[in-house]
Image 1: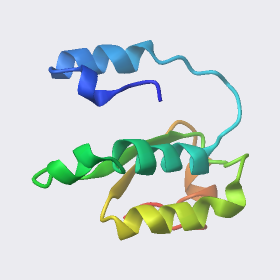
Image 2: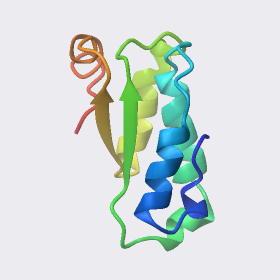
Image 3: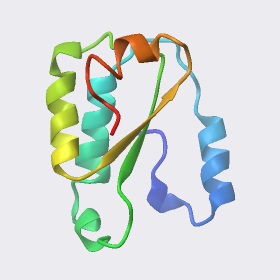
Image 4: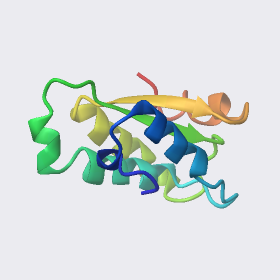
Length: 107
């Protein structure tokens, strides 16, 4: 994962870390990204201690899953079972035709 939120204590630090993320122009592994969020961000003991916080994933995507696309629906269902919201951020206009309707990603 590019950003460990536990390493930052201010909004400015988080925003600076986000600005340092490089766009690799590779595959769109939405399933893998969501799985990492579910297991590494929301799956540990730290998650259980933070009961008073909103739980959401920010999914930044070009809209076309190119890896494990057949497992995306199951991963989204697991995240929804944990009462975690997914906020989708589109970087192209293809997102809405390929993701939001076919995979019911967005709450």
